[in-house]
Amino acid sequence: MSAILGRIEYGSQALDKSKFDRAFKALSDYGPDGKVTVHGQNYAFGLQYFGVRSGQSDSIELQRNGCTLVADAILDARQDLLDKLGLPPATEGGPSDLELIRSAFLKWGHSSPNQLFGDLAFAVFDPESRELFLARDHIGKRPLYWARGSDSFTFSTDISALIEFDDINREIDQKTLLRFMVREGTWPQPKTLLKGINFVDPGCYMTVSRSEQKQTRWWNPHDIKTVHGRSTQDCVHELAELLDTVIEDNIATDLPLGAHLSGGIDSGAVTALSAKALRSKGRSLVSGYCWAPEFSEDFPDRGTADERHNVKRICKSAGVPISFGDKNYRALEAFHKRELEVEGFADLADEPSILSQASKDGVRIILSGWGGDEAFSTIGRDYLPYCLKRFRFAEAFRVLRFISGGRRKPKILLRNLYNQGLLLLLPDWVRRRLIRDVVHDDPLSFINPTFLDSDPDLKAWRDQNLPRSGDPKAFLANLHLHGHLAGRTDTWASWSSGFGIQYRYPLMDRRIMEFILSVPNEFLFADGKPRFLARHATKDVLPENLLKYDTANEALRLKLRLDYWRALMEYERDGMFAGDSRWLDMPKVRDTIKKSPDRFSRDDMLQFRRLSLSIRIWYLEQRNRSASEEL
Image (cartoon, rainbow, N blue to C red; front, side, top):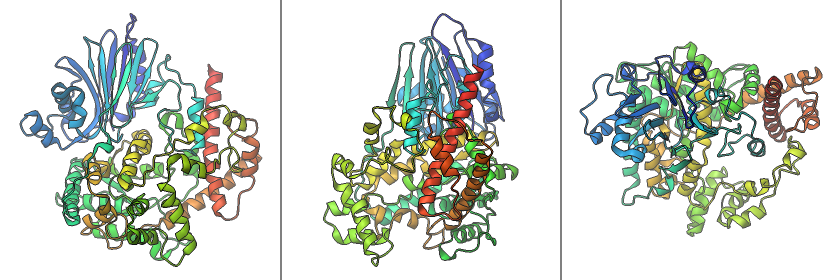
């Protein structure tokens, strides 16, 4: 994971080189393979370089052909791009991704992101016009933040660099924080938690001048047209070939690779296919990394639904060793203390332990199946109302029976028919009236009532739910635009930098996503079960009937949460959570901490999830108070 930083002074004031260098130093963890800067009287740009492909660091030149370019990028489909640019085939180490992006921008200008495949965030600056162009890949596999001062503009792929500048507002944005809490820790687009810092949306570019900045969407999943005339087998074959191509692009490195492996089809496909491709080159994955615990007395075999059986079957077939999850609640405690205002909102507390182990194993790149549910395998959301709307009742019943676990549970069948079928056929305004507003009267909510009432637009904002039209691909497209996929990749980019590790996300490749969006809805659920295309495209490398229920992983998480809840009880007795809070209902927080259960019920799990978020917010408030006192 490379990192970039840039700053432009639009007034008469010259750029302060020492302040820029201080901010650039905050990105040092990202640059194990080189650091390059370029300075002008009123601007400066820098790249901390992580070399994924050998030899490219020798050709890093930020300023050439009348433009300054910095990029955190790994380009895929490089030969196709060389052909479009009319350039000869690539030699060992060159041309670099940086030079290819420059050539693409000089040829296609603002349309250049459409021609680039891979993971990227880049900036192009014209010193004469002092105009800046920022762009981010289609789904946000690389972060890109920006801040506008009174007469300056600053951008970076990490917030930690931006907050080094004194003129950037680092106060907590109260409205964004409240909406983050109301959504129970999910990403409240389109803001960071800091007042002065925004981000370029995934799939967008931004043009910046002295007087304004304007964002334009260059990739819209709703624009992908359905291609008819293909059979399901045609699509299965095409997806299998596309997967092989994408995996080859993602393993095109000499660096040691590991892979996430949860036991499901997405991570399983990435692990099995990358192991197969590496084996053909005389290489192998260092390890698969699983969040679930190893089989033990504390975590015994949970039967056929235990995902660890899938993990071991995949690893044995692929010839890959496996590393299981951490069993210490201290990892959860450390997660709550992390700076979410800087690192982002992602809530997967298990991941730092994975990064630590992978780093010890010498891994430099982790291949992740993150995003597969939405981008690759798809779980068939909204297919039930899609069938009902077209009076395909036999097919609808087949889908309903699958998502309800059979036909012998009439109450579950009826509930799913209403919630996942009939309700989604209603207009949005009717559906909103039928869904209870639970924020103000929820007994498990830990938000300070005064803080909750501080946003007069809150209810209207909450009513803007993810659009549901009873169309599976429309729902997928809305998910892609929602931003939650980038929410996790942003955080993981920050976390992984300290371990010298880079993530790659093969299943969020634009070629795969556009292919899935181009097939008819019926192909996503062709045999009455979700993930039809993915299951059949990977049948040669994955075990048959691969289903994942996360029983072992959830057992581990329940144990860690219970252990941590008991630790919180001790901290509360010692007075750690004494005092009031602007954001939290502290009497309710303290009272809940004291009531640690012996075993988790369904209500206890919901309560802990909200308590966990409250502890993160409590640590945020302590940091914010300390910063205010220092000022």
